[in-house]
Image (cartoon, rainbow, N blue to C red; front, top):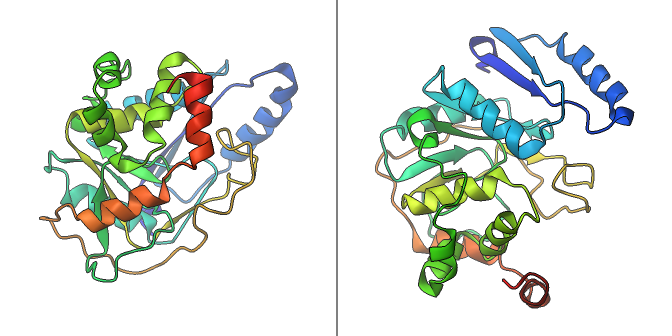
Length: 269
């Protein structure tokens, strides 16, 4: 639904090596036949940019022309009402300075029984079936200019990891050049503006790139949620933070003790 009313921009990255060239050509031949949208624009990169640069440049380019954007990577499946959900969320919360992103994905949390809403807020952005607004994306700090201050302030680091214990190690690895992630820098940007991500209680996205084939998943995992749900979602304009939801979210993204020790010893974080 709504696809026929939507313009689709596809960013096709260039091959990493000569051996990838044939596969890239096959993908682009398929993209040339995509229909079902109001208009399809395929932007082909001659050289490989990598995921982070492709996403940041692509999203920025679209938002230079439109006030909002919905982003899907090629390993996402969605419900038929995903676009309806996303457009409603982007319209409902556009003027909320404390909401910087929305997503159709939710991890398989242990939801508090007394939580009554269809959506919730947490201090973390999702990179799976997400959207944002031009005036908020413009505030992103891709250089993470406050990293040294965050590193030296344990209270701020604790606040940063309310969205998951894995956030600080990811940000530190990003700044050390160990990984190249746009998503952790976008979450950091939300944090610096005391803003949150909006998630649905019932997921409208499934990632099929967690089978070891995805760029950032070199291992097999079925722990990211398998069920998707169609159906109307009520979005209260005055939705507020719920401590029990943040606690449930943080429990899901809790790092195993041995991984904490490994990060400490290997990376000094």
